[in-house]
Length: 364
Ligand code: DP6
Image (cartoon, rainbow, N blue to C red):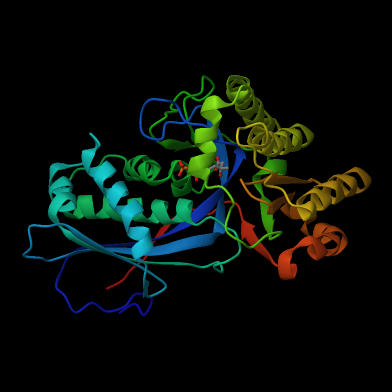
């Protein structure tokens, strides 16, 4: 028995459990196409935040009722506030052409229970939706297979379904860097799901780490979904989408050739453009805090002076992701990090590797 998830005293028809990492985008998804469900306006690429994970068990209970039902628990506590979004997600999966008939019938009328927990503390401003929907989609694929469906590419299907929950979640199902959205340089690319970047990455860019500096542990002032919607009326949107497409092509080249400076320039430019788009929207949002800017300036000054491979990226919030080559970890931790921590709320930061993927959990 696995102590992680509570015992259930109701008979279980199917059950699956996965651990799935969050991810950090290097080229950002910010803006959706007007058609499709969560089709991105431009292609994006992310690294897997292998140490920041959701652990999720999805259970289909044996039920006599013809009505569907759903209960969601986070760290053992019932979370009714999560249920509408997850209900919408399950409805989207059931309506998608890729959903096998047996699973569709259970999604429409079954009794479902979800137990999830994150291995990073709540209240650190870290969005858990990518890891959470990634894990949930992986569980759904397992259950579809257990029901007898023939799934030729389970990770691709999980990525497609995760996208229906939260766009960026589709990039969480791979250990390799994940590319999502149509791009001429990536033959297999798709708006429907992410694909792993299998090309040989230059050793100078293959082993990096991320320290997430918690500048503001509070809730985001604007949700990603609202943020994406603001692009519709943003006069710079088309130029931004074109720039992201160009950045992605250049970033892939830099990763294969080991052009570390070019890589860092693109990654930082992407972060600043994401924030610039929010500042240039109506209404406008300034998501950085004074500590965010102070950290950015110190990272740039340290890089200039030391020559270390270190740069930053940002999410749609105030926290800073400090990205650096593993070979530079000692000097970054000893010489740069202490000067950044005073800008963090309660000196908080989280460390993650950038190259481990989802894992199935045994629960019987
Ligand atoms: C800034 O995936 O959270 O993290 O598709 O509406 O759920 P929805 O949005 P979401 O947006 C993520 C935006 C971002 C950039 C990125 O991860 O590419």
